[in-house]
Length: 200
Image 1 (cartoon, rainbow, N blue to C red):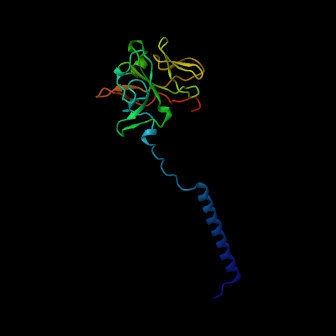
Image 2 (cartoon, rainbow, N blue to C red):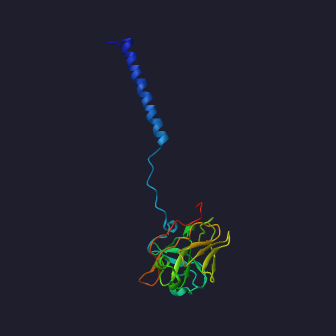
Image 3 (cartoon, rainbow, N blue to C red):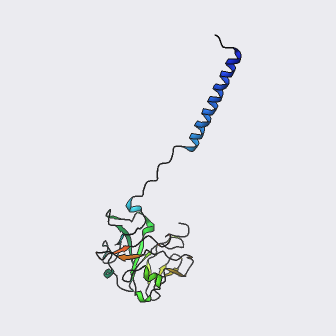
């Protein structure tokens, strides 16, 4: 039987609705895009410092060696280092915020919290100033402060990196450390606060 004009109109209406609905779904899919894949885990050299990491010295007479307390003279200049992951045999140096300073001070002079984060007098501080992210390279043995000469901020190494002068407002983050079975200085956890400058 031939379709009446009324039937044809109804059929055409359904087709238009179907097309409009389908087009809307396609537009929504285009806007949303494909479902995001799970974020890829950073490679070991880019990961932040983690519990169990040792410290690879970057300067001084023991450059390129893993840190032990006897490599640091009490009260002497700080030495730059990066965390080293023994599991993957990788220095985590592709992440600038992992740059740290190793120094050794008398535990009797430290406040209680600083002493708790140290191992045999060894302290590990972020080398990135909390003001504008400059690299801290100077140790003042007289005041026992770490100093940033970009804008003259100073941080008290005996008091959890507290700000003592300059425009910095946040204390310098620390890496709590302990000694492993082989006598190496190892991270007991990550940084005590986010490292980097105020805009990092």
